[in-house]
Length: 271
Image (cartoon, rainbow, N blue to C red; front, side, top):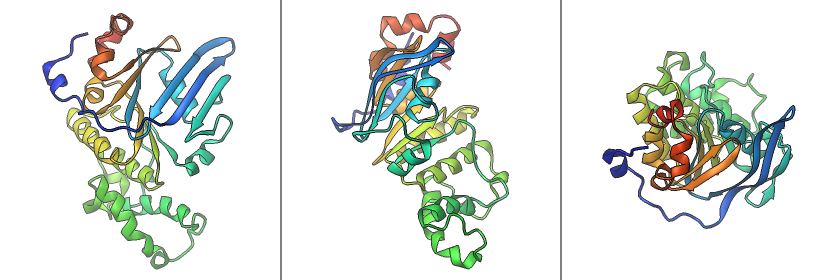
């Protein structure tokens, strides 16, 4: 696996990360009808970091991500968020604690404006989640805050547009704005650049870097160029287990990782 000089030059500058993990997994495992998808995974995500979970196809990274984000129940092991055992908690309850997942496929309300999409999330926080019958002027007090989140992702100028009118890359940015409106301490991103063109990949990469200020990000991502630019730490999985962990330069130069990515999987690493 060759690392281009450009990738080396754009690797993230090490930040002062907390030594206290915000999310931990201990001996995490998942079996499906006798098939072991994840086995004995120990993982610690440092608070304030951007941490990537990667691996060849079938390595177990997506299953592990679904376990950590509570969309799958583990067969064994424990998960701790801010020292609280969340192993058997539901995703909605974990979200209220500050761990929020953004999905691989953009999830927005297409026939609502960008402002309304963000405002729906803020209504829940304000205790107005089920009061859609309220006149618009009664919800206008949430508009300034909704605009602030749209500003974070560069969409405030399009606040009154319908979400359906946005190009795909901007829909991903809108989804991120709605996720940020939930005030996450830990942001879980599932393939944030999947399906994006080169220009959109660059924009979303910079967007993740911006919104990570003051937050922790755990992401599953196939684009190693993106990871080389913004991630502080990378965990590589193979056959359901952790193969290697370290900085991008450390794991990309690891002989075991290189061997795991031979063939078609190696092409994915450079994709």
